[in-house]
Length: 282
Image 1 (cartoon, helix red, strand yellow):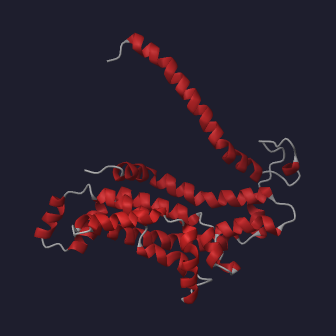
Image 2 (cartoon, rainbow, N blue to C red):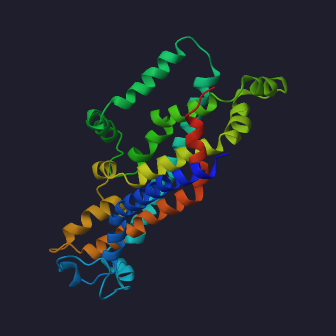
Image 3 (cartoon, rainbow, N blue to C red):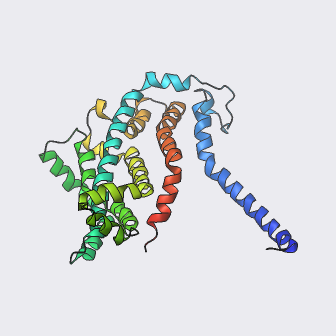
């Protein structure tokens, strides 16, 4: 055990570290605090310089009048629809492919996996035009299919994460299941998936956040206003007015990040556990 003198020596260092972390936390939270502050300001107070952090005239009605300025509920529904299907497709396809990479020891398996991981280095602009031409020939432009269908063919990054987790499962577990008459699919569905809940939660969070915040994909493929997602609505909000309504824009941004905060708060335990487990390999 540490002596009294050692504890006294370590105390100033801990205090200094706490102060540094506190200052850095405040700096990191300043954009979020300013966003919340701006959402409560009136139009006149937006033009004040220097800007005020605490509004002089707090306008709670900004959170209700936004529904008159934009079809927020419609964009919410569209984003939830697209993100929900992308999460489901990514979970099903990526987990099954990752399980196959671990369980089937066929010749060239590692080379094929390396090729899969190498696709992460291909920039999206290099495949953007060929994909658009393909989906246009299929007649999928101005629909959600170009955004949703690719998720059901797996994601290289998610496959990598899940493969790391499946590698920690022992072969004896699946051998015992096979002796009991369990097929490979049942081994995957009834044994592997229940054991990798934290990894699946990590994949679900990543997939939801990336699809929820995606702007480029919906901009390329969606043309109808009734199909727009939240990122398109936020990007187009400033172009509807001669003077950018920053208070309305900040209110819309707060409404947009609420599902992300709720999802992460609910799955935080599984997310941290999943990240720690997928980073190890026995």
